[in-house]
Image (cartoon, rainbow, N blue to C red; front, side):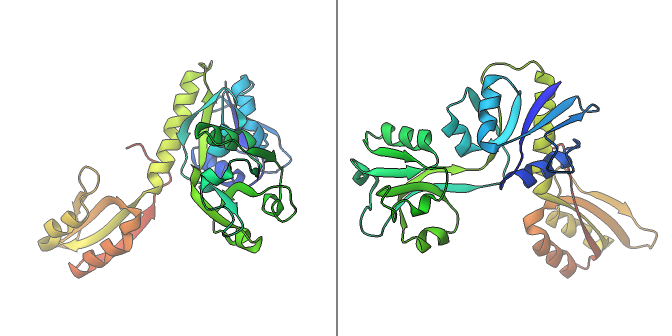
Length: 282
């Protein structure tokens, strides 16, 4: 049986649970559930703190888990990234009061506050920068104002919180993070289960990139229409009961949906319908 750790709360939790549900796995209905069995899939889910998941995976308590790339690197656990999942993206950056520190090299001899001490210390060490890394569990943005540090290293999305604290980012990002599926460095007992989970996750991610487009088009315009929607291999074209018309079905990129609909309409296509794809094997 494959044992999988899932974030029990935080920004990754809801998206991870929904993605697993889209993969066909049973998921908890209430936040109080800490363990859930899915006998049909031969999987057991454990709902854990996102920061602890890499440690559980690395120790072999669970076989795999979903967490942030930043949390994995900061854990120092014997776990490795297995598959990026395409959600929960964030950027990890240094910040300080404007004009005080503008280059990473200027952190030498300074104090840097962060919730990711291992990650930041490793980053600075690799560049030969000796600085004191101060670990805080929260409210990192206030560290400079309170005199705990000269600069901070934290997750940045819009930068609004940093600006409100009188800080500005500097230097290149330490890391671009996202949700990832991780596994033990050493082999796991249920390799087949992990491969099945990987295929299902990949299928959901691929499906999110495409939609299914159906439309009716005059036979005289079929060739031009299918050149607009060539599909992955080839579109399906079927004659309609009304003579002179054909029905076309094709898989198209989701981002191009409205542009393609405009082109098809100009070619005379009508009854253009778009359907989301929940999962795929392509």
